[in-house]
Length: 300
Image 1: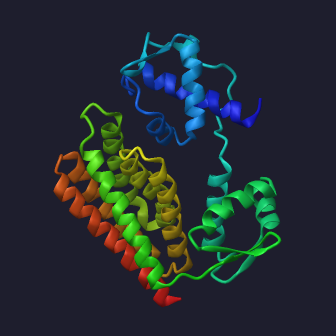
Image 2: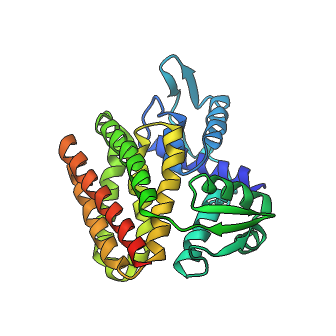
């Protein structure tokens, strides 16, 4: 079975479980929202929905895609590998985070697409496509013939990045607070708050794992915007912030402890239904991140 087919069947089985347990409401959320929830592409979600429509599990109506009957175990795919296949984008970003964290790549260093492809286990073409996307944000520069440079960043760059991030996240949290109370993302917010509280208890030793829960936090808020352009920009912005933190990691534990505390404050305000206070807490968090970013430049 090909990687893409196995991934599609794996996610389809997860969606069937969520539909049968009532975790996903009918009509279904948009394809963009479902793609965010299950961390896959919209193409994968679209193919799954079409399969479900063919199986008479879903029906397309004027009100959207609705559940025609309660799914059961017979609707699920059999003999599906449990390990989710990671996409090239995720693999490249994960490797760059690792390389920066371990000091294998630092600002000004050169590396080749072939080296990355060999380390990651994907094709040179796939590496090239992902590096081109990142180069649009000026953190990487193509020197020619598959040779790349990790470029230094200055305070002016940070200010512009912060302005864009503030615009996107303020819009997103306002959209989130306007979601219906039966939207699945409110349940996810409660679960994420508990995850944060548990992580806060062990952050002294596991502080380097913060980037994972940070992405989940901001991705959940961003999902309310249901905007593919914001999604694309924000994923890269988030990666740049975390890469920069790893370049200067002398105070990383303390910074991540502060960030976790700020996340918890934001989630509590959101779940209490107080939009203005949630927005204020979010802006405090973004200013903290900006200040940390600027301080890391001074230390270099």
